[in-house]
Every structure is written in C-alpha cells, then in structure tokens.
Length: 265
Ligand SMILES: [Zn+2]
Image 1 (cartoon, helix red, strand yellow):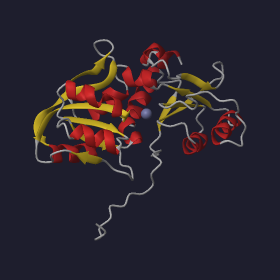
Image 2 (spheres, helix red, strand yellow):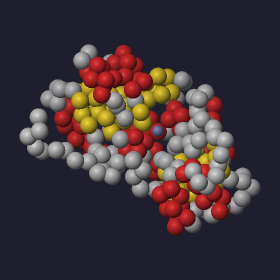
Image 3 (cartoon, protein in one colour):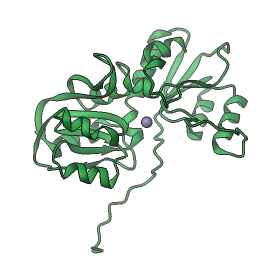
Image 4 (cartoon, rainbow, N blue to C red):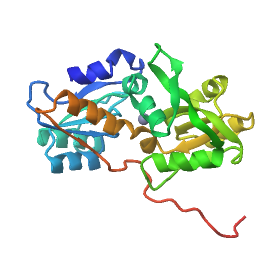
C-alpha cells in the first residue's frame, strides 16, 4: 500500500473520489497481486483462479457510500466473496489519472505521443489528461487506425468524429469519460482528442465548432494501458516477494458490436 501511495499519491485524488484499501487487512501476508481496471465479479473470479491475495484496480467499488453490504446485492456479494476468499481490494482512481506514469501518461504513450504535458496541470508533470504531438503528422483516418491498433482490443471498438482526411499532429488524451475536458482540449490547441464515453450532444455540438476531432474509445480500453505499467512498477519494487499479474479480461459492459448494413434509412 505504501508503494502504491508513493506512485499514486492519494492527495492527487479529486475531492469526490474514494481511493485506497477498500477491503482487506493491511497486516495480511500477500505474495500474488492481480492488477485490473474494474472491481467486478469476472476479475474477482480471475483473482481466485490465479490465487492472488490482492486485487489492485483503477475504479473504486463504492463511490457514493452504501448502507448495506448484504450478499443479495451485486456489490455486497463482491465484498462477501473477497472476504471469503481472503482477497484484499485496493484502488487508485483519479490519483492514478493525475500522477506521472499514471493512466493519462500510459494512454498518451500507448498512442505514440511525444513531448507530453498535463492538459490541465496540477504540477509540471501531474494533472488531468495529457497533450503531446505525433512524431509525424498524418491524416485523422490513419491516426485513428493507429489508435485502434495501439489500444487493447474490445468488442465495442472505437468511434471517430471529424474530417477523416485532415492532417493532425497535436493530440490530447484523457482516459475514461471525457466530456468535461472538451473545452480544455480545444483551448490547448489539440487537433484530436482521445477519450471514452462521449455522448451525442456534447460530441456533436463540440465538432460543430471544429477541432479537436474526436476519437472515442471505450472506457476500459482507454484506461487499460495503465494496468501493465502499474503491474511492472509493483513487480520491480518487490522482485522477490511478489508475483504481479495483469488482467487482460475486457470489463466493458459491451459484448458485441453490430454495424448494420441495410437500407433502413
Ligand atoms: Zn475510469
């Protein structure tokens, strides 16, 4: 926990956020850790199968508090299964978004950005999102294809909005839901903004004003590049004491995407 809090300082977390040890006893010995994006049932099952005693996730389990952890509720059931299997749960959320080497940095690196800096700086190298440039400018269409090849594959894929043949070089990124940084990405002079979960009206109204064009990944795919980086950090910190494993299970809610090819419009 101390090492995780050094890498992702809790005081970088947003005020509304909940980060740290969710379930577990700090004195319990551990020798195997599983790192993942979401604290959900499939990830817990994976941790049980791999015999991990700690799951480190990006997302919190309870963001707004709860009155019940009864096993009749999906989250309550998860709490029960964690305790019954002797598995602790720890999360680093907006503190990991903001930190150097965190979620935003990992997404920027995954899509090949250079000279990156925080989009909304907290300090010189911490803050929300990142902005950087491509080594070589290219058409939006080609860059979007490169992004699709760089992010982990998932059924829902990515969506692209803007002028596909226009050349782009300055790119802003923010892992996870990205509506709130659209204006910042424009103000910073980005040609493209990569995030997830964009909705019809904010995206459409934004694009009516021109750049940055939009690349909308899924929430899981945009944040997953942090998972191997966090696992490597932990593994290098405890080379003998810990075995650190990476979850590759896609925890987006979407199992299938269909692009209709019919005459219905
Ligand atoms: Zn997220």
